[in-house]
Length: 249
Image (cartoon, rainbow, N blue to C red; front, side, top):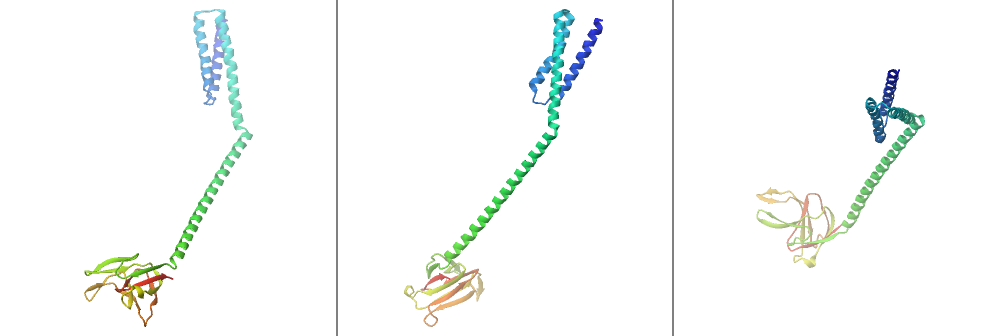
């Protein structure tokens, strides 16, 4: 009879241990403390079995019965908690809350994307407006710009060059139209000439020259003020002993 009861007790203990193992497998990974407690409780029956083989008294049997009861209720509690947590996770309300949360996060992300796109467009428009305003201001500042070219001096636009060992000064004035006045008080000669030349260099009669695009003569018969136009890839050459004042128009 005792052997039968002992076998039944071992079977019940094995069932409880299997039940607890099932509960442990279902536990979330963060419950490490509870998992350690359960492992200790699982080790106790083995220890009691070892004691039972050596000391067969009422204290050992009482201890074994107590451990079995603790294991049983602990496993039931653990398994019930696991089922409750899974039930809560799978409940319709919780699912709806997760869906709403995902929808809200998506809406927030879309709003942030739209806001960034709007800020980018505003920044681009601001830059474009700034560029347009700057060009407009530069254009207004250029109009009415006045400067003087005097033969023999480079000034702001003059560049010295050597063609066939002949040194001369050409003036790379900005492209545009100018009202040009011959400065009789600054010129030792009574007449002066402006040559608008191309930047290309050609050979003519064995000499290297700049082709002349237009010529403006300043004298008593032609007048001392002319409208001079300088185009792309052109520069100005003035005759010696002369001075001219340019006003951009």
